[in-house]
Length: 125
Figure 1 (spheres, rainbow, N blue to C red):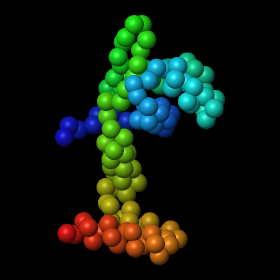
Figure 2: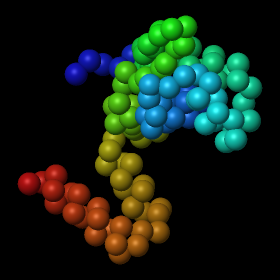
Figure 3: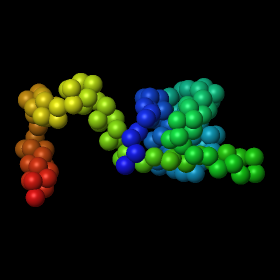
Figure 4: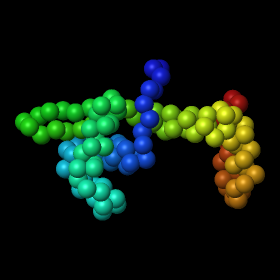
């Protein structure tokens, strides 16, 4: 798998969430999805879309003068990269420290604990 060489900002994540749900889609449609949630200026959203295209995260079909955008990177791949980046930045890459902190400081229900146990059991098989 190729190494990811870009980072997606928090604002760009909101744009990508729309595109992972609906694509291909026009910039106008993305604006309509995001305006109630963000109250961003349409130009701001167009700028974010342009950045994502430049980063190679979004592709664009230019058809009859109407640009339709679509994701070139899956949500899962972006989530993996964000998780790795967070783990490296906050825990020095130590998954053990992350989990120890999480388990010690979160009020986990017995159902959540059981789900974690099941995940770990699956991983050991």
